[in-house]
Length: 155
Figure 1 (tube, rainbow, N blue to C red):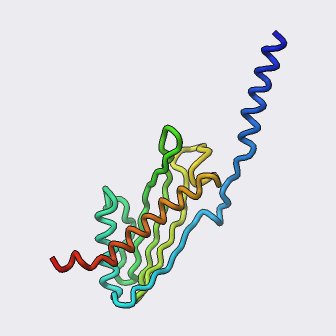
Figure 2 (figure 1 turned 60 degrees about the vertical axis):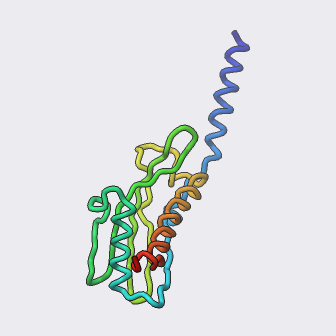
């Protein structure tokens, strides 16, 4: 009997000691920003191509696009992403802010949070932050590719 209790305590100790090494992602590190130059593309074209990209990228673009202001050339989207984690997908929400000036575009990802209450993974944990940021960077790369793809206009 004593042996069984000792084995159970050992298993419990090893299980909890593994959790103590989990590090959280600092709040100031949970954002991404990039500035891209488009020397030959006007502000109006950048704005319309960005809206077109959002409509094609998101299943429900009308729900995702929270603000589209042609005067300030700002687009704000609230999206949900997912990263695989063993047998399930960890979902997280984010805000993507796109500001456009002549020949320049700034993309910011902010307010990145786990979708599950009490989740011990996703953007809140340092070990999965790389996957979350890679997902967001692939969104940005998709937008850059869509803006730079001028072959579709000469159909």
